[in-house]
Length: 194
Image 1 (cartoon, rainbow, N blue to C red):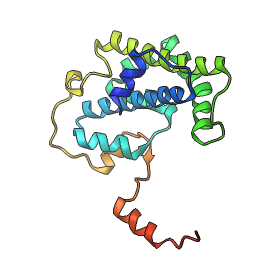
Image 2 (image 1 turned 60 degrees about the vertical axis):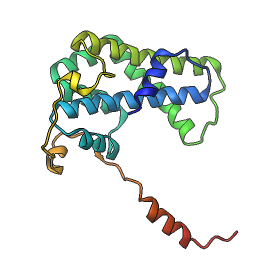
Image 3 (image 1 turned 90 degrees about the vertical axis):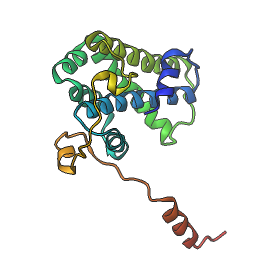
Image 4 (image 1 turned 30 degrees about the horizontal axis):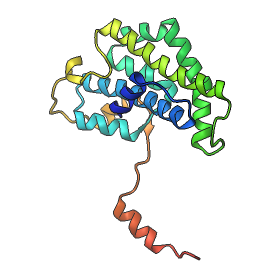
């Protein structure tokens, strides 16, 4: 959860580049992860454990906003998601921005050459985040950028078990990268032909 990136995208003038579009998309992902993180902390999950859950759980982007807001407050979360501008912008994000992100991220496109498309993608990502942030502010009188303590999270000594975490139905385990030591060992074992 890159708060610095989220703030930069929300509060700095945008650039019309494919690189900036990808930055704005990463800011959206970070923002949704931040919502989930705050929800986990409000459920009593320790800070470090909540960070690990965010890092090691694969949650489709289409589920992250709803699940995060329901962890914070199910009823208020539903109201936010049902707001017309939030719902429509999030659906457009999933149908327009997410596919372009995938095309660029997976090397199908190296640049988004159509300027109108690029500008709309960037504007959509930014305005969607601002709309969600506005509705969260109206509903909770807080910001997702606020620290979890401001939201009411308290220090916890309890470590949640895997079963307790699975009951939250966040997603499935993402594969963690192997350690650098293991990677170096395996790398040295490769019989390079050149």
